[in-house]
Length: 108
Image 1 (tube, rainbow, N blue to C red):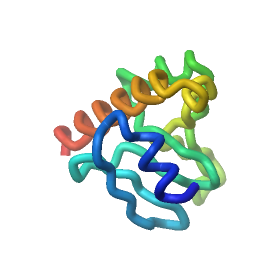
Image 2 (cartoon, one colour):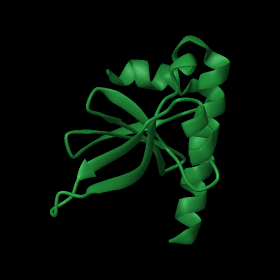
Image 3 (cartoon, one colour):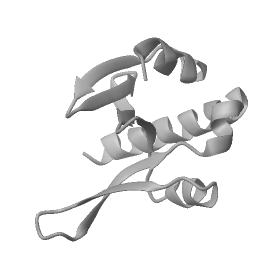
Image 4 (cartoon, rainbow, N blue to C red):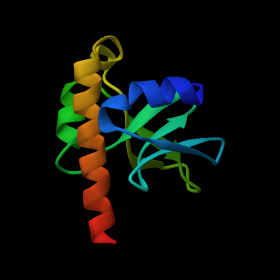
């Protein structure tokens, strides 16, 4: 996805910055990464609080095959489909992803 489209998608949060990383893009708000553009999909940060909500909305968790072949689950989820057609829904998920990212930063 091009940067202008990403910025428009997350405009409800305010200003976002986009940085290239490992074959994709990291999407930041207030200096905190809260989403990725990876494998032609936008993925939102999730945590113990938001993951059940994302799963219930039909989002898929990003995982990859680790060195031993076992799946490694990452803390990022696809955007629920209905959010792509509804700016209010996208704003809700963007805020939840940013809140999850802030909680993760606080734990560091």
